[in-house]
Image (cartoon, rainbow, N blue to C red; front, side):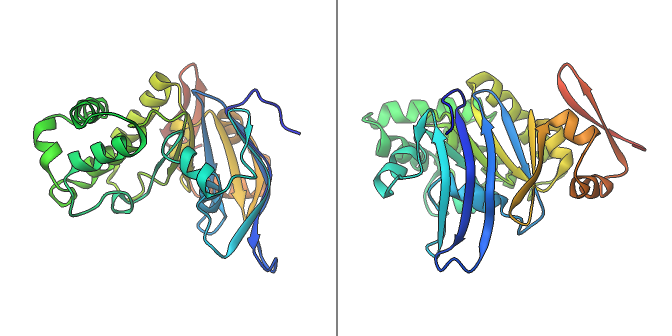
Length: 277
């Protein structure tokens, strides 16, 4: 059985079709504590996004899961719809790859933020607006008066991504699940969002599960890396160790795809350098 020390513990998580004809994720295991970032890495179809959905109680209707999930010392495996609704958003925030998955195109940004807050907490609209403006500022979005009245289509992709981060953090969750949140952004905006997430994890002492196919991002963000292939975690360990001395052939293959980069460890984390490895 799992202990209670970690914020999130996953043990033997298995996701399969309800007829048990296909196993999509097989006995995955990992743990995550407050203030730490775990990067779950794999190719498209490896099961990493399904893993994230399982932790949100959002698996597609044709799938089922088994195994042990613990969040803040509480077993989640037997949660029903009511329990998942209480946890999702309130205690576990999520950032999607595309902002349009979370933002309504026909509702102003300010109303989306305040409605979310008031749907979970007993606060006045005025108090909700103050909280929304504060959070927009925290994610480095200035001119809150204009933004609160703006619609998503009036903002850039990077600005909408920051709005979605603000939305994910508005209810002060303990855990943040970020599913490829920067893959649709240009490199400059991507770097800004990564720097913001690192800062927020440290300041707010969040646990963050960052789902990606990109080892470079993992090198910049992760305390721990778990490598997933065809539904199984084939390697897991401290980021510097996995990136500098990979043990599994699949991890080595992923690194070979990034052969023009090298990784070094320092006091501030893992650093990525252009040039020969």
